Amino acid sequence: MMKRLIAAMPEDIEPARRLEAETGLPLAEIGVHKFPDGESLVRAPAAAETVFLYCSLNDPNGKLVDLGLAASALREAGAKRLVLIAPYLCYMRQDKAFHPGEAVAQRFIGALLAQWFDRVITVEPHLHRTKTLTAIMPGIESSALPAAELLAALIRRDGEVAADILVVGPDAESQSWTSSVAAAAGAAFMILAKHRSGDRDVSILAQETENIAGKHVYLVDDIVSTGATLSAAASLLKRYGAARIDALVVHALFNKADEKRMLEAGIASIRSTDTVAHETNAIEISPLLAAIVEKDEA
Image 1 (cartoon, rainbow, N blue to C red):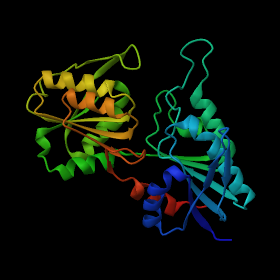
Image 2: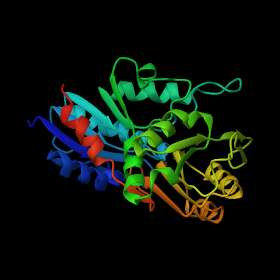
Image 3: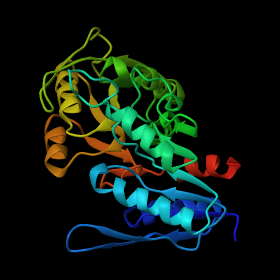
Image 4: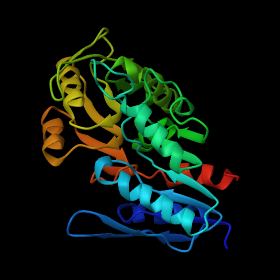
């Protein structure tokens, strides 16, 4: 049996090929057949001692059962160690019961994945009150990879003078990694204040406005699902004289109508990493993943 293998769910075969090219590890595609009643037949390729199973968990309700079946099939085929590569990790935002009777989805999903895998690797999970993946995935290894340098590298490639750039985070939760992007780009940063009263009902305020006028603003966010936050932020920044506004996103979950609204709000371009396949993808994460895969040891 071979030592190490990348296996990919069908929807993730393209980014898995990029990881294959970076690491030189062999790649096999998990077979998934859908029956008319909606159930799945999942087939594992020839396994290895360690299998890196690539499955980004956007649209999670449609993926989690197939992922669990794939993990089971790989164990049955002889895999001794399973490592999940989930560049986007679902259900991290619901980290407590905000109202009586609510399920704490983060805790449930973390425990579920810990039953199936020996290690989980992800990129910029949305952790707020929970500070580490270890807290929600007991008993296994976990790695949360930062994306700040990837976004900063794109800003540098744009070639703007650092003094003309302002990196803006949309809310207090974004401060840590917004400041990291700005530091890596050699630019100033600012954090806005957000109030959300619904999925698409968001208001944005700026505590300091004197540094906005004339600046090339890079709005940065980890997850964009509707674009309501970035649209509101762009409208505010335009009002205070921003010369240009571009958005850089780690996980792009929004649809075409949401994208249109963001552009109409004044955002000149929206670029995302390929943690989730999206037409705005402009930043490949395969080098980031390859660095940790190459260091992985059983």
